[in-house]
Image (cartoon, rainbow, N blue to C red):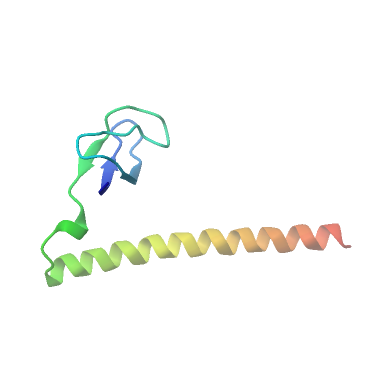
Length: 85
């Protein structure tokens, strides 16, 4: 099963999903049926511009994940301090 990117027109969520060729999943965020299938950047012809765009998108996603992990770690430390003081 191929991996496709989708964009939900109802909530604006962008997500990837493994689906059969002619299958369309529902949005995982809001449950709306029939999200738009996007042209995957990995299927595009690689040029300097597309590589740069893919790298920028990857860095943005990585930055968001790091911020979320840092926030969760800080919350954990705060809770540990409260529990043991």
